[in-house]
Length: 229
Image 1 (cartoon, helix red, strand yellow):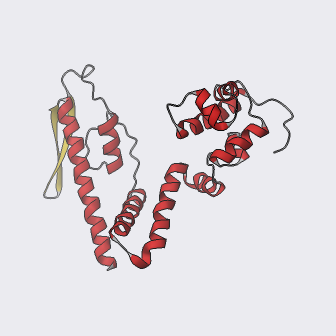
Image 2 (cartoon, one colour; image 1 turned 30 degrees about the vertical axis):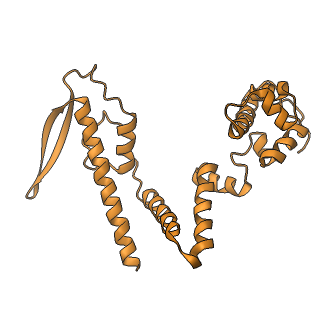
Image 3 (cartoon, helix red, strand yellow; image 1 turned 90 degrees about the vertical axis):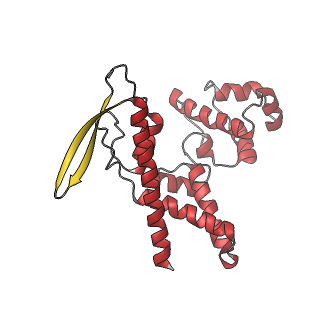
């Protein structure tokens, strides 16, 4: 690492503080600064100052963290998102977190190693990868805006899950409930029928739609497996 010509900015110090705090919490989220400092062989005041974005870590401090937790200087200086440089390239390309990349790498490595002696867990891992691929290949972003339209007929799985988990459907501003438009096809004509629904009824529609989409995903995955055999 080259010697710095000027102090780091507040934003840079905040990025560094997040990286150092994450390391301590990954070791033990409930550990005190003093106990953690004993483990690291550093002063607790130095660790606190770095985690509170008041102090820039020295080269010797960064080396200590690298020895204990791995990573590169770029990672500990907040200039890289991932400890592993290979993961950094994947993150920059896909936006996946290092934890997600490591889990995918773990699954793939397990499949490669055990393919010759395929056991029950091999098929579990293979199916997890298949499901993840299916979800990514079929993502359609619809804006996640529940108040724009409550017609969930054409909404995708991730949209429905997001809406079900994070929308309050507060009826204070709509005391009469939410208007839900149900589309029905009769012959060649598509008819819309409006229904006034309360909060719990709207939630149930989203939950049923999630179940419907999950069943559809399961059937399509099973069909792909059947076609490949």
